[in-house]
Length: 436
Image (cartoon, rainbow, N blue to C red):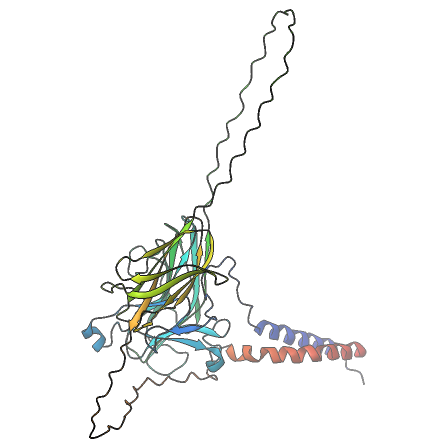
């Protein structure tokens, strides 16, 4: 028995509507960042500890934070946050916008003013645009998606290439205090020289249980200045020749050939400079603060992208920064070998892009790592070696995979549903055509 035509049409319409709904659930592809010049902009290229195990920052970026007074920190204000990678393979994609990782930092029952930064080479006077996405969670309970406190985020550009987040040179985006959702932050500034600094920032106002932020998909692009046009002089009218009386012709002479002008040589590109130094990072934050002295004994090597050495320098702790000069525009690798007795609190290797005439300064941060003091022994009695009790570390709060923000659960299964519809749709349409 055949179904009435109206019912067959209704069934086909319903099936197509369901298919369109499932397609709409699929997350959009990752937004491109054409011309982006940030290293590890999507936080997918690894993380490393910076002087402390609880400070784990994406490679290519540096942590920064307001370090409050002893009294402030005792009361839970202006403390250094913990920095961690947010791994979607463990906690789901709720707070990872694209890929498998985002950069997280947080405090428990404490406030912070903190973030990460990265210096980038750009042509002088370029118009620079910085964009990033952030998700803030500030809550007095363990509620996964119901913040009840104030937490704000922003991004900034220092057009002079400085690394002080509190500098008046930094141009900040408007503050965004939305929580429990991804927000896009954007700012523009004009570069004053050949280097700018990108800042990602968060500000926690109250001492609640969770003051957490997640940044992902940073993008920094620039538009180089347009050279001013050169005024070309217009040709002038040549007056007509006045006829002269004819004269008796004289014997002609063979003309002498005029030598062709020698072509002007192609201008040589202006070389660039990379300046380097190593310093004693006493507070382990990876940034050279006031009072942190230069270090001697660090070997810094410059090589090309094929790892062929070009030059090297061993720091003396007094004459730095040392300049690797006369560098042709291109990409270089700068590697540090730590001084004896020190360990790095910043990456030991940087990839540097040198533009024509650009100057770049790289700082290698090192923390003193004293050798353990040997235990004295006597001939009468051999002491029994004892191990130091482990330092307790904060237990991370599980981030439940099944308590995702609205819509995330549907997105996680949309691929399976679409595959199912893709298999059944041709069969259903064939059936409907047979019935029509």
